[in-house]
Length: 466
Image (cartoon, rainbow, N blue to C red):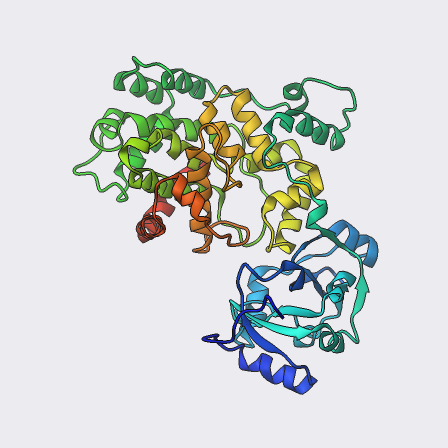
């Protein structure tokens, strides 16, 4: 028990859980959850179902639950119980999260054999942040009616490519060929059949790199696309920007409220977003795509302003990086349509893992790799491709490091507030130091953004019309 937390100032497990363990004669110790606790000791519970009924599945948090292996083992096609039903079930016992205790439900239980290879297990108590330390011998007492199997994939066996961008093209090609009927080597862009960029987006990209571009130029481009013009005007008129007076035109929106830099990047984000449709399928309990994008962009906008003036990267481009940070998600849905649902189902049953583990395991690539590749294919700025590619690496300090660092920080700040999918991850001191930001200042930025949550949702709703 050397890596267990101290007992001081720990909130208690819910009474229903303590009474249940007492009735079963199971000894336990309450400990506070913290990053230092080994994931091999933590029991990850998930409640699955099919037409036959529900099944509780238990495995260690250093594993990925593979639904294909589970189907081979059980002969059943299982998916996660809908979140609203799970919440109603937990609510009957006044629990906030699913405890890893088979006796709590009347459902049959299946556990991965790897679980019992440690001396002491750490089990969700039903109270967030409070774990129950139970010896493996005592835990076995609760598994007398459960079945054992091997259906988890060790995370050590999933080799994510976080820092080898020179391998991206080869790995994406390999993944695409493995999941399509095409076995003849082709150029990657021909194999993927990415739709061409809209004419509006092409014009905006040219303006972005034109040092002599004026407000009249961007106004002219935006006004040629009536839907885009309406969105820019609506954006500027939003209470989020609290503009004085009525916004009557695109030029009004640019000059009086948004400014050239924000409009050109906002318009580009809107144009790119319309190139690929939102997938009809998505994981349960996920923040809507554009809502998460707008929140992330808003936080990045605040973080950029909070940096020392001499060290700030290009503000409009950091905003665009936030807007498009999850664009690879749309690309995966476009490139691998028959397999995207399988990715969604795996994300639902592996909430303890970053999505890149699931994608690497199932496809051999991640959304960050394919999203960054597409940005380069479309001749977008290198800073943007770098931001997408390295956003999950808090230690990245290569060229244009400020851009992925800002995305990484914004995403982790929002996840800590329940926005976005995936586990809550720590924010290393080195990440904050690279951006010359204090932890307090970063928290202040996300607090201020979330104060305007209702207004941001209204802005995000404009993007869902594609």
